[in-house]
Length: 374
Image 1: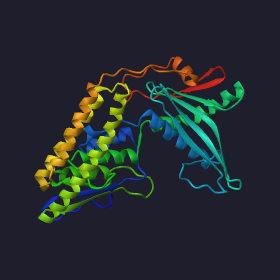
Image 2: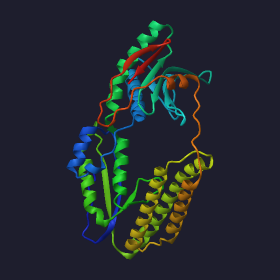
Image 3: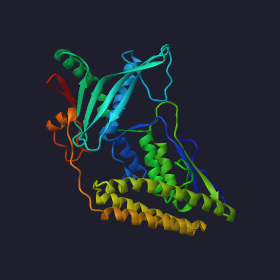
Image 4: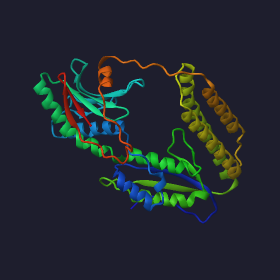
């Protein structure tokens, strides 16, 4: 059962402060769709993980499984501590250049010599993911054609099941973002910089109950249960004043994030990089939605909205100015190994990637380089 159900009070309420914790959750795409339909949330079903996310997750799971059996180093990160008992870690590095059609995942072995206070690195495996077709190619460090083929075949056989599963599996982070989006669609405002604590008006109490029922049905691993907590806020003058200040600050934080987001596209347009009109229109829609929430809280809590409205107007003007800039697409350069990959025809993408099954990894051998396509 779900811990910390929605709290209730007999006093009149103006809304709820909401927070949650989702850990140890993995759910298949079909199961998530069924659970969301049962909770009346079918229209909010998120897209499955992208090929980039799925490939990275597959690599992490594959590395961890090999480490557990003693076949390789454990996965690590920049913050991980190193001891004499585990002097080697497996790191994943992603090279993604916007102008390239392929991105690279490099599996790097980090060796630590604490006595010499030194670090050495070696690239054991490279995977290249085509951004449009999602073709995956693998190169290894094995020398000799026979060894390269054998090693690539082993990698393909081991990694492919992890990749196929990751393409249709949602994890805790995916579901937490889904819950955040559902909560924000309830005219919510973040009460803490960076999120994690939200205020939801009383008018969305029933939607909060449906969301709680959905979270309660999510499958979990181990004994960790999800938490979804809503604390009612009593409707009195003191509470309204406090909430008005908190909501106002939350909206200003959102405006700051929106300004940073827009600045990326302003810089691109000023440098002659074409920005898609749809991208800017989506931002304009977000600005209108925030302005609407400000009006809601002005009516509900008596919040002052003039500063918010002025900043929204400035964002809208700046976004429209991006569309007015005369820009041209830059020419794409090709060189090195990326050029070789771009010249090699890749399979045409499926009409609907969400419905089409992901093909199994297959083997190709070209110029002593083993390519594993997925």
